[in-house]
Image (cartoon, rainbow, N blue to C red):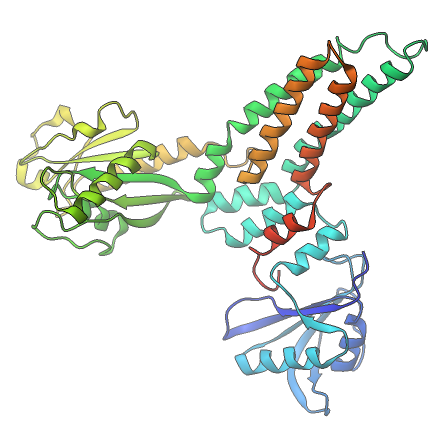
Length: 440
């Protein structure tokens, strides 16, 4: 695509900084670089020199890089000014570029959007770039990097190619059934492949929870009676005072969450209101929220005071529960050893390291191999489910109407095309790129 306007933006993040990168893209880039630096540098080779204002005064000493299209990230002429990262410096350079005809400030994700529209990457790779930028843990980085290499795109496009081939064979059978080189029936080959594809998609969809854990975190809930040591444990695991700790029952009334990085995985640890009878109205709301969260959590830490244990009957039937006995420094080393998965003391630190290892192991097992190809967004899941549904309809209608079966194969391939962006309405692109940072 040829865009009539050119865009400019700070691409290197918060100021002030040691170095700031101002990025330009569009048909006016060559003229802008020549105007501001005096001449066009050799493509893809950094050149040191002065940037000049409209009156010829010096703006800054900087490195200039020029990337002629189509061999650039966006597929059109692009350039970067690597300048000193002061707010005034960057502001002056953005203002200078903005004075040139045809330039405007870039919108969030507009550089990547132009790269997509110019065929430099597909929608899945663009989303993976956004994930790579926002990655906070090593697992998130590996997952995003794997998707940015196109493995996810290859899987979906392979399914789409197989569907297009299946549809072509079915329509060939309908239109040219009397020709010798057209198979008499596609049921033994095409429909067997479609059946296998449905299973492949279902298996792939089953991995979405793993992708959620990698992206959003492994959800760990701390639950127990008042004064069992829940908030103290949260503070000990977070290694800072996150929750208020007192001897008064009902101190914690709402959910208090902290995020940990355990062995490269994001773990969301949540403290809850103590479960007890006779709680006040506000506290009762917190208790109800705690019970509801426990049913959906990836792991529940059931906390009991070893000196005065109170069982939590609301957790009966839940599978992902670790029973934690607290205050072992007061109860004694041999107290109730067999009744708990871990016994700890937040005062002496006994058992805390082992508990952290156990939580990390549970999170790692739930996330699995972060290099696996998984559906990474809810929109992928919805489109894949619709794809599988169309394929199942095609299978059930094939005996009655090959026309109807072929149409369902077309609908299925269109859904796959929407995932990678082969079919991408503008409103979808607006939603996706609005979540990108400016300058990317």
